[in-house]
Image (cartoon, rainbow, N blue to C red):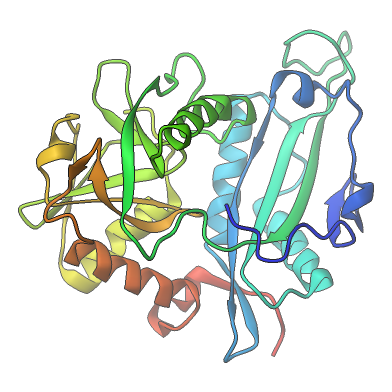
Length: 319
């Protein structure tokens, strides 16, 4: 992750129902989510359109719908609706008045000052739910201009009956951190993780597509993947703009070695072509034509340049 200008602690955050400086938005070290990872989060990308002097938040509503679905997994009790969360986020962005690409991080978490990994909040055990939102300048999470060299990780993706990967649960990202860190230490750009039965799940923190014989293929949601908003976007754009259907099925590890193209996608990863897996060239070892077309189109869409998809982009500033 590349922060364009560093973290400005004087920027405004939303914390304890108020807009306050980020440097003052602090939690107690006994906070349940800090001790046990009992919170959920989202990552929303804001794209600066310099020619229009406008900030576009890509699929903000869809992200907040997913956030509230993640809350159900941890018995969290959010007090804000999707529309209220969107309104708070727009106001927060207006207060910070950014002129570069931004990353918005909402967190909903167990805020009780209690010991014990219990998710209940009742008369016998007070463990309320809290909300925070902050924003930071953000460049590319990975270098999308070059083909990535990735490995298949020895770490297995968390299972739905252990920690559901379909929710963005804070504690489950230890699984991501282990896979990503090992990949970097071994000279790779990122990692692909497998399911318990040895099939491809997704990237360390992003979904994955392959291309075989001109067809897009991606893993189904029951292969312990995050139900990706960018993943759904890619499938829709591929169909609408290039008449490419997506086959949703299990992917064997060795298909990564014989397919024509591979790419990651996600809010932070965007559309990131992969040119090597486990020291094996993907296709001809260069960014593939389908990956490139989808990447170029995606960047046009998220910056509000495609009017037919402008409804996916929430404007921050009133014009």
